[in-house]
Figure 1 (cartoon, rainbow over the protein chains, first blue to last red):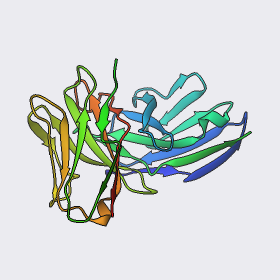
Figure 2: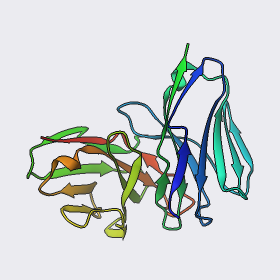
Figure 3: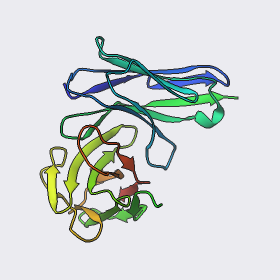
Length: 111
Length: 115
């Protein structure tokens, strides 16, 4: 019940394409869903986050879509660039305030 | 406006030694979280602390691991008698208010290698 499942594990996209990463959760008590971006050797950096009372949130080229009834949410990266190549983690925060992370998606954007 | 600071960035220990990892939260943040990232895996919660209090240590191994966040100074994650399986990246995050609706900001991590 505390898990967040993320797919795909790895993703290769051409420059200018759309990258889509999906996550699903079980615990309906989760009510804050951040996405983190991590470059090799660095700490995770908050990219964008959404609350379940919103179905979509957009910040620049990054969009989160949220389907509360299906308990699924996804990250879309429009016009993907080589500089977006990184590992992306979805997460959910539980009642106690701790982040439950997905397994991560390694994104590679080819020039 | 410094972010979350962690030191050392890299730490090498031999089996049986002690490892001490330090985390200074962002200015104004009084909530600290520790996460561990094993090779090729995602981040796993270890412990959540406020000043002088452990709020949630459900992710901490029962033995050899301890954490503190004193009134003054950084938060410390201590691993006694390290074993090879402790080799991982350890990340600290901080937030201003804690709880379920608060953003956590991560430090650069400490990469522990146990020989």
